[in-house]
Image 1 (cartoon, helix red, strand yellow):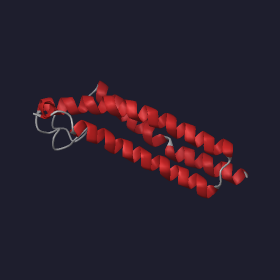
Image 2 (tube, rainbow, N blue to C red):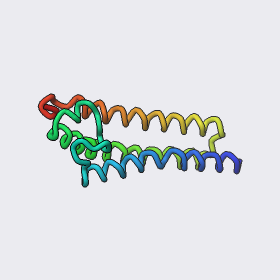
Image 3 (tube, rainbow, N blue to C red):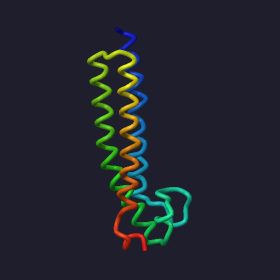
Amino acid sequence: MANNTFNNVLFLIGELPTPLIIMAFAIAMRNNPPRFGDNTGYNTKRSRKSAEAWDFAQNAYGRYATKAFAVMSAVALAVGLIAIFLNIGEDAGFAVFMAVTTVQVAVLAAVIFVIERQPERNFN
């Protein structure tokens, strides 16, 4: 039993930093966006079309990613704590960890998709 709790704590420690780190970078990008042409920031082919497109993409990523990963941080924490309190087994804990990680990747892809699908006027 104690081993399951320990494993679930490790899974929580593994899944929680990702959304927190992404959210921290998003806040930093929103408050202090990288200059046009830098190798850092939200850097896609569409965002590099012009300085205006670059500024829009940096700001949009900062807004969307901050909100999305604030929610993902809460979800990861809630799921991790539920796994600890329910004392689920190692295999189930690993499955939950992988599911949360997969959802985090999907949310990041969704943020990128939303920004890239913004009206063409934002990227010209």
